[in-house]
Length: 137
Image (cartoon, rainbow, N blue to C red; front, side):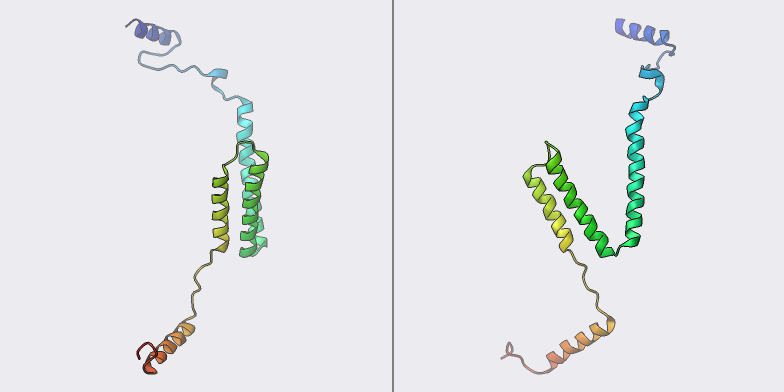
């Protein structure tokens, strides 16, 4: 009970009414200028990277842009290993490289032309109509 009275008295002395929580803020309530600089620099650099990627994408083919992206990912992993003392363990680095390799090897399924698909279907039916095969004997 003594602590509650002391807390209420301190709040009243600070200009707060009963029941309000007073949180002291350093620097008069405004964030320090030096704390805002990294955030602002990060925002400017992020916007610059986005515009650079957009411009690069318009100048390169989709394949070239993908190759460039993979090269950047590999460079990032290499720089992380060389520069940082506390980087990911070897198993995690191998997993990252495996994922990058899998993304490079990925190919979309080829969609056939309708005429090509019809021709392939006719050929497979013709083979069925040719009579017994070696498996049927």
